[in-house]
Image (cartoon, rainbow, N blue to C red; front, side, top):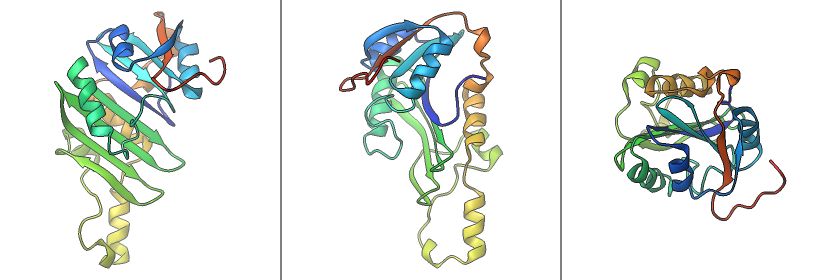
Length: 207
């Protein structure tokens, strides 16, 4: 199984790994195979590769770039900037410990959809655009803390909680939008990728 859980990644349509690495400003670059690069990106840095035709993925649990947590006010502008350079750019993140689940997409520099849920705090800090078809099908991405939530009855709070996404919903959305990393068998990828660090981040140890 490839990566996907407890991390974040970008899926970029029809862009070469070098273009994505340049847009992210990656430094201290090393060429790595898919398995080693994926494992390294779980620890530090970012791994950019093209595991299937038509899609390049940039994976980084910690260092994808400044402002990549969807809770950060700079996140929308950051994704739009990447989209201006790269075209169709999608972002996904999930962490079951804090119940942090997010997805977003930008096309030609316009942020068309973004949603983020933080289960630990019970908040939806980001909701931009209309839910896509797969979100409507799954029943997620349609609610946040509406006005008057403080007065909800317990049954209303339970219904709200039941409508919140999980890590499995993030994978289903990624799959529907174009590519889910869980669908990429490690042994099927035979092209190397680029591992590096965004500006301001130095390697703490050898990946």
